[in-house]
Image (cartoon, rainbow, N blue to C red; front, side):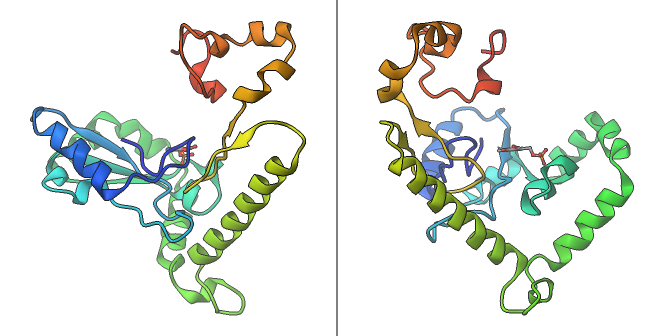
Length: 208
Ligand SMILES: Cc1ncc(COP(=O)(O)O)c(C=O)c1O
């Protein structure tokens, strides 16, 4: 379960998460990995709802977060998982090599940064927190990019982005502008396979 979602930028509403939760009632052995790395980056006043907080989802959910995403340092690859002890403990056993392969200074730096992320001291004039400033900056960039795409003389339609780092555009109406050769070389254009919005690393041949 991924909310806010990459690459569409969708923030699942509480009602939608409740609906998914009600489906899960029929599957008592199903566990959920909730990827909520963009929890801090919702736009336009939207609120992120944690899947684990709905009903008794806590007992079946491990939620993962990314320090790299929170602090705009995606290459760092340091994150954390939160969940019921019985689940997190097992994850630790299975992934034990991940812990000691992480660089220690990076882990310490993330722990320090987390302590300060919602305090006012990180910003030079003290008027905002790091996370609020990040949200304002990303909102500005999203608005700029959306407007630029709309203003360009091409019939593509940027999709509305509610959260996260990505902005997708619907290029359906650009089809006639694309040379046949290029259409043929992209297997996501194959209607039979029905993948309308490629995010190409996820849809390479062999990974579908
Ligand atoms: C939804 C989502 N989850 C997880 C990750 C991975 O995060 P990290 O770079 O910290 O490993 C990404 C990175 O793009 C992402 O978009």
